[in-house]
Image 1 (cartoon, helix red, strand yellow):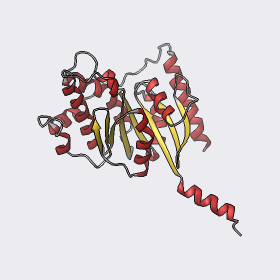
Image 2 (cartoon, helix red, strand yellow):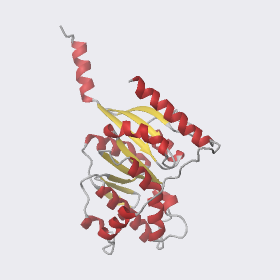
Image 3 (tube, one colour):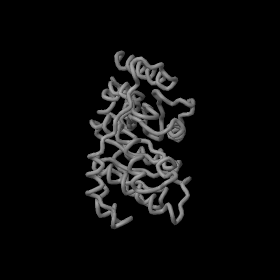
Image 4 (cartoon, helix red, strand yellow):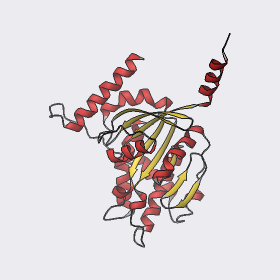
Length: 259
């Protein structure tokens, strides 16, 4: 006979959402800031690895891959993609640094983002998280480029059936939880407070920022561009970062072999 305690525990477990995040790209500091927002504090300056967090009624499993994409990651990524919300990390300060033009922004986004999107093409859910937006100098010269960046990322994610978040740190946990629950709502309050969930965008909405933005042409250029993944020569001496990536891959492989 099932005890009242066991019954209550089973109900409680059913109400708790189990979520898995695959956090990729961006700088290590951005990953740490993201993880800290969920109460994950035991993170060093190298956040590569597996992390677990409980936020409200959500249990989160987070796999972190900071930095550029490397083919050494692919076997592990393939095992994680089907059940994960892939979160692509971008740094607005890097994308909107000196010599601002639409062409320079497009090239920076392509170099940072496309290798990861190609590697995670089998993911069922994805989102772009843009860090440090509030630190960008929002003035007459930069306003058009900030708007262009938002339009470009929304266009890319609309094509991927993903979402876009230009966020303030305090928004991050709740927005991610809403994405995992499938109950997220469109929010465009300011240049650093933009949340466009999957399925809620359109060419018309994107062009509200600038009606001259060429959605069709820009998307075609994005699909045509080829970004070559940098490979490490077989006889090269491993750097600390490369050694860390290999150790992380070995660590995750052991986990999956044990399951």
